Every structure is written in structure tokens, then in C-alpha cells.
Image 1 (cartoon, rainbow, N blue to C red):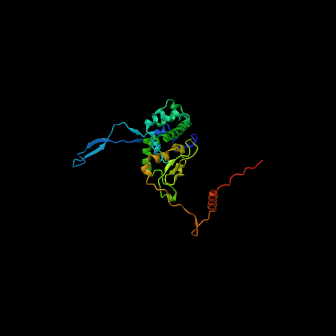
Image 2 (image 1 turned 180 degrees about the horizontal axis):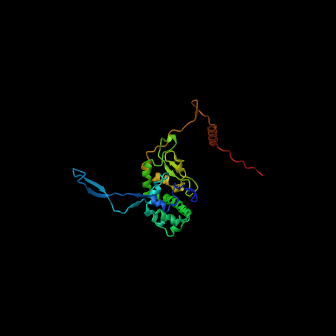
Image 3 (image 1 turned 45 degrees about the vertical axis):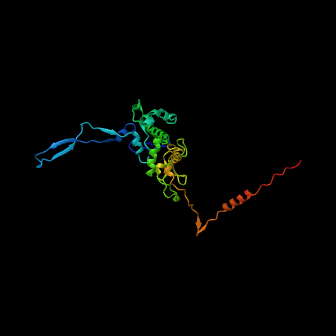
Length: 281
């Protein structure tokens, strides 16, 4: 089966096995049956104490509560960095400005995210349905990058940050500092997502290999730094690293010739430079 990638809408996000028709089969797989039966039976012949047996019975027709596409997508393994974008935010055309030119099958993808039926959906081939599913993933990621910059999005990301959902800094000197997702570019398919440490102020690859395949533009270059600025109380207690690792051999520091050159350059910089000589004709 053909697979689709997040980084490339023609073949980047790997679909789960058995999801060859995401537009139709995906909805049935996301359906959760919650059938309870309500009935009451009294059996005096089998029970001397006249015990009432309660069995719950609902209507004869089966009721299925479908999980929204957004909730289903964010619950997928490997999508823990995402938060659920409010449907009201997605339905506002102003928030989607410019995205129609960046995402193929834009109308179909938008309807899929909002759980709406698209006209002409039944005429799509299986390959086109796979492309629509991939386009929906990319469109949601681009909307997500804008949503997390809002007050509502910041609150949802703050909750994940407090729960260490994004992981911890791999640098030993940071002592397990919580990190934030960060992109190196705001353009799709240029760089994968990284994690930013507010303590050492550097970026690293996520620990999970599934997170490394996510496009960094789904979080963007602005979010982690704006998040730190908007939550001073959350990061005021984060001290800067006071200890720097020093390489040693048998207890002695490894000699670095650059330090001598640096001091020499500084000493030479303090000396007054001679005035340029003007040659007489």
C-alpha cells in the first residue's frame, strides 16, 4: 500500500494499516459504541427472596457516537505535541488566510477536519482520498501553528508543558528542564520539529523517532520564544546553567591554544594603532 508522509503530501505521513479509505472507513473506525440496556425483570420462581434483576436496555436501534476528526488526529501515537484546535477558530476564514494556495484539495481537507460531507466526495478515487487525508494533516498543522499563538492556544500548550508532554532537555547541565516544540522554518517540508530548552536556550532533536518525522512549521519559529515572554512567572524560577563542562585528562584541563590567541588579540587591541602615514608626492 502507498504511504503518505507529513513532510511531503504526496508520500510523507504513514497511514495506519487498514486505512485505505480514510474518508469512509476512517469515520467508522473512530466510532465508539456506547450501548447500555435498560430493562427490569422480576423472577419469583428462581429467586425465593424476590430479588429484582436490573438490566439496562436502550432503544433497539444502535447509537454510535463518532469521535471528531480533530480529537482522533491528536490522539494518534506520535501526535502528542499537538493540541486540539477549536472548531470556531477553524471556521473563521480570516484565520485561514493564504492556506488555500499551500494545501492541495483544500476544500476537501477542510471539510474532513470539520467532519462535514464534501460534494463529489463519492467520486474520488482511493488514491485521491489518500491525498485528501494527507492534505488534511498538513492543513491542520498549519492552522495549529497559528492557533497556539492565541491566548486559548497558549493555555492549552501551557498545560502540556506543565505535564512535561514535550519531554526534557537532553543536556546534562540543564538537570531535566522541560522543553517546548520549536520549528526552524515556517515553510512546510523544510525542517522537522525540534525542542527548545528555555534554560540553555538551545534546540535539540526530540527523543522519540515518531516526533522527528513531524514538520517543524506546525509549531513555527515564534511559539517557544513568545510562550516564554508571555509566561514570566513560569520561567522566572528557571536558573541559567552555572556550571560548564570542562574536558580534562588525568585531572588536568585540556589545553586550548585559542585562549592564548584570544588574549593576545585583546592585548593588541588595547594598544593604540599608529596613525597612517601620508606619502608626499
